[in-house]
Image 1 (cartoon, rainbow, N blue to C red):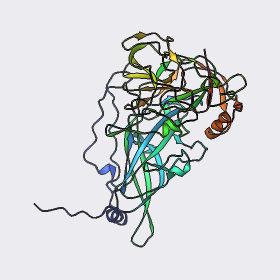
Image 2: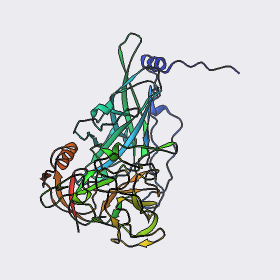
Image 3: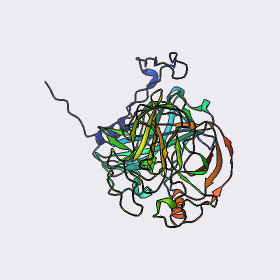
Image 4: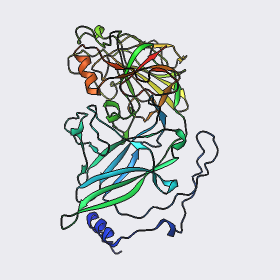
Length: 433
């Protein structure tokens, strides 16, 4: 049997660009068959029109959505957010430089939709930047990002595509990606391809009651625009990249003077939220519970943290519909429920602590599609009602600096007032009844 001879990817791409070898979508004789998957809202077959065939371009990089479908959620900014990630791999023999990424609607001639912007904890714009996996130490800053992808390397690109109205959100999206490489004469050559098709779910986020009570709870690490600890984290579990923390929230609480901690910051009981009651955000069955791990000692390196113990003392509740809620980092001995117990909305689960992978007292809360804190995909959620009390001033790094210095956090109260069926965003300050 004869062997097929392949040109290096860099040369193939260059040859295609020079000769402009394209397949016109109107010339395709084979139409894509309609998707007959039941609509997640109505339960009826989806009668979408067949998508057009895109021009054929050999690209030096390939990309795909991590953990699809993408699920829209309304944030406290009033906008609909599509928060997700693209995995890129350079399969060519030369470096590739990312020039642009456009989110397009394939059912409308690949028209650009939405607006995307993501920033670091220092408010550095990294919207069209790769976050590389092979980092000696993650800093959560722009130093972790680059527009260049070396041969045989992979990287992640974060998106927060927003819309003013849910009716503007397409049912499917693709990504028009332009990268550049140099040709034999060291001249830059642009290559543009369209790919990374993903469904946009019509299933609405689960509506929950708050897992905490009281005023001035700060979302210190959540969704969507600010790429901090939770959105930044991709867990390589059992051979796949998981995004269990994509919509996770870490809650601190401010006292009446705007302080998170008063006195020695290495004393757990000086943190205003330590010991706060954690309650069930929805009814369901307890499917996992840990209650005997010690609180981490503040000011010392984390101890005994593994993939299994990362959530610390915690409760996982199955809420139905393939959705599970995680309440993590509770005080040892404070968990008040048992595996197999059916709990009511608002029932006491435990008390906020500092166990597991935690360097300060806080509640880690998220919703996921499996009963595993890490080996799952995160799902968006909204609270049935809450009081939006503003946003902390400055950047995410500014918040940390103020808290660790024992200072009072400044709150910008713009837009404050009651909210219904919205998800808090990073740096939001909210009150729960």
